[in-house]
Amino acid sequence: MRNTGKWNLGATLLALLAATQVTAAPVFPLKASANNRYLVDQNDVPFLMIGDAPQAMVGNLSEEDAAFFIANRAKYGIDALWVNLLCDSYTACNADGATFDGIAPFTTPGDLSTPNPAYFDRAAHMIETAAASGMVVLLDPIETGGWLSVLQTNGVQKARAYGQFLGKRFRNEPNIIWMSGNDFQSWQDPSDDALVSAVAKGIRDKDANHIHTVELSYYVSASLDDRTWRKIAGLDAVYTYRPTYAKELDEYKRAKFKPTFLVEANYEFEHNGGTDGGSTQNLRRQEYWTALSGTAGQLYGSAWSWRLQGDWKNNLDTVGIGELFWLRQLFVQLPWYDLVPDTKHEVLIKGYGKFSEGDPIPDDTYATAARTGDGKWVLAYLPDIRTVTIDMSKLSAPGSAAWFDPTSNTFTGLGGFTNSGTRKFTPPGKNYGGDEDWLLLMEAAIPPRSSR
Figure 1 (cartoon, rainbow, N blue to C red):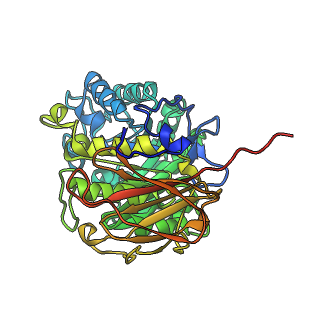
Figure 2: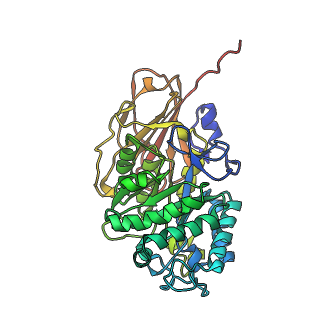
């Protein structure tokens, strides 16, 4: 990361110019923070979830290829993986649910009471490989896009017993978050909801070590929309193909909230029906909106990384994953866990644009902003070039400011500021990638307290 300005950066902004941030490996399993806003490890160290979605890993990869994928993602700071424990043609695997080399998940096809130990052992080995790289696995026990009909055939009792098997088998794998659902379009049907939640309840019967979440329906949903899951989920998964900040801020303002993360939005190289597609500009908007909307993190995905088919090995090092890496490297060096979204426009008071529940992402230019509780940091993401006005009194002391270019990982310095009155800020022009989005950072230089 290089500085393109010629001025005195504040102490923390100087630290942000370091080439690499080295962090200690998390001590799993993860849990909710004391204020229920983000995730922490067993030492209460905040855990910023920046993940990928290799949904078909168990079905399509050998253990060696899974290790290859995990090593690649570790280079980009990925610390979370969405993996479907069961995979079929809905999620790009064999139609019968067997692995690429013929290992079936059940000794009697479609019978949840006949789990095949060899299949689940292979999955466990992949989870352990992820743990060695400091990654948590969001493990979907029976994804609903392809396996809901199997649940319906087996019934609630077998579904709960299957969950109990999983809880016993995986409870000692520390790096798991249980994530049910996946395009769970019928969650409002009580019978379908009962089947999916029965698996989670069965897991909890045997596994008290790991938190749960659920992905509900597209185009917009969150785990806590489902009253049943409010009693099960310890983590609130937002699923949206719309501007991500809208549903995320709704969840942030929920009276009985839980840590929120973006489980799925548009994927790189994809354009599903009714969505905007995964251009890098759209991805950055999703990602920076999310980072400033009070979330515990987010998952990325690409057409190559979720399917893991064809020439996937040569299509991992993309612009999208690189730009996500820059976001992570920036935010892990900031007190991201203390950022409070500026929902009432008390910090960014003019120029924030129109809050929208459903505008197409390319047309949505809403500017999200957030401030740390101590007033040391203010951040604002502008999807396009415009002038914004900041209430400088929201910063606790004079300090320094800079623009961050999310397409080149560079800063443009703006010099110092006083923490009184208002100040207008305008991005310096198009960014390195030829787009117009920029991140504004302001750091107050809070003097140390005198010792007595």
